[in-house]
Picture (cartoon, rainbow, N blue to C red):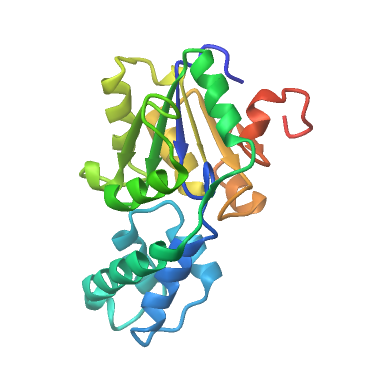
Length: 228
């Protein structure tokens, strides 16, 4: 699976980081508080992996809400609510992920974390985990660092440029949502992986035809696992 791979690009929440879905729960609550009824499953289906303002707009559009013009108000409220939630939030790595990161570093494979979060939110998560650039990962790239969010491949392409990787076939992209897989395919990544440790089900991930679907990233090094 890792043969000829020079760089991996891993999503954060649900893929490398366990934050108990607090972001999407907060996103749901910010929409509900605006007088719009939506359940968490719908928020996860439409918003997982996306830049969060875009996720709100997509949910409102799906619901045919007459409040679509209020997306900025909802987004600003979401950010305030998330700041409050993060003050008391306990986060931890997805089981086995830190060992995977160590093995990738030992194999001289670049580790990039990418996310639909803004940089401030992503750094908050990394600080809670005590993950250090150069030790646990080589680069963080977020939705606020690019002009086009997922599924556009701009984040992956920016990381490739940073590490002078010219062939997308040498890049592996992994995430817990269909949009992660589509992002990887749009970039031309040699391997795309859906993981079942986060937001979406096997059935949802299978729709994008990833190269592999794994229970979690720790199976990257368990080549005899039945998921292969």
